[in-house]
Length: 159
Image (cartoon, rainbow, N blue to C red; front, side):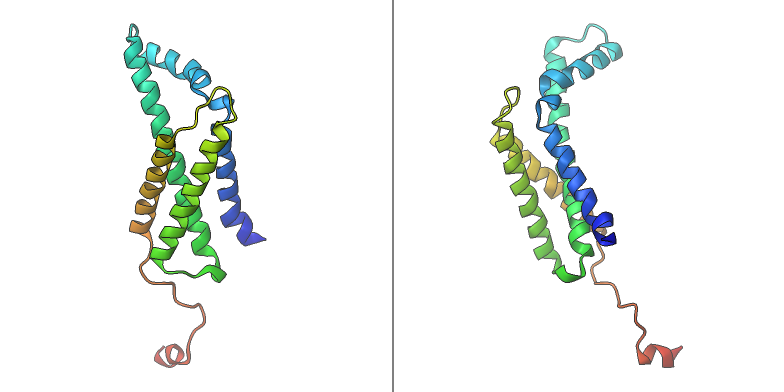
């Protein structure tokens, strides 16, 4: 239970955050109510075209970052499971496949929300975000598995 709470619960919570992001609550109409006043406060008189460009840019960066975080959390959870010891390339592929499947289901979910539109381009952007997260985590991941905590007879003799 402790392993689940430490490693898998954050994954499930983050999946919920992503799901919430694909609802009407985080549609362009609703998020622009917060972003536009901030932009106009930072630079009064900003053109509508510039505002729209920034809104789209921020929303696309959200796709990248939310799936990068998902990949990091999923990598961490799969790496922690003693029953799922797999080589790094297989782990990389499993995490990428998991993120891609959730991205596809997320875009499918958006097809049922009136204020959202599903987009293959956004799904691909999600996968690129997951790839980015995987590149970050794999650059910090240890290349060799951790040694067992049990001391061997030769370690006792050498000490």
